[in-house]
Length: 91
Image (cartoon, rainbow, N blue to C red; front, side):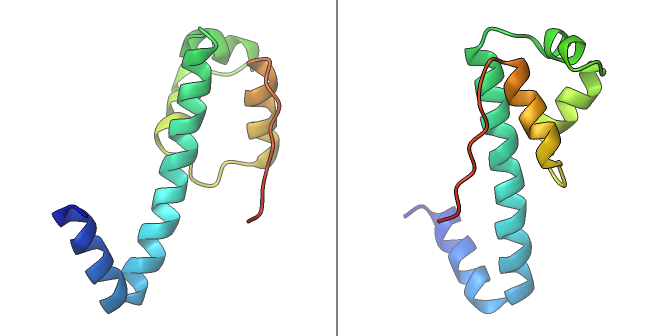
């Protein structure tokens, strides 16, 4: 375990607010990273995806870099525009 991971785990056990905010922030970050990876694997630029979704490149960038409060309908459109299907899992 890295020093950073140790620090995060220690802070999470000592500070419930930090733990809650860290976990939700990480999940939002992870969603954006996944969306960006799928777009890049599909060989589509942000500009091209924005055009397919009838929006602006800045909106795509915001979703990929800060995917907080993204509606499920937007995620479905994002996936569909890339020829993919959205699959949610509750574990």
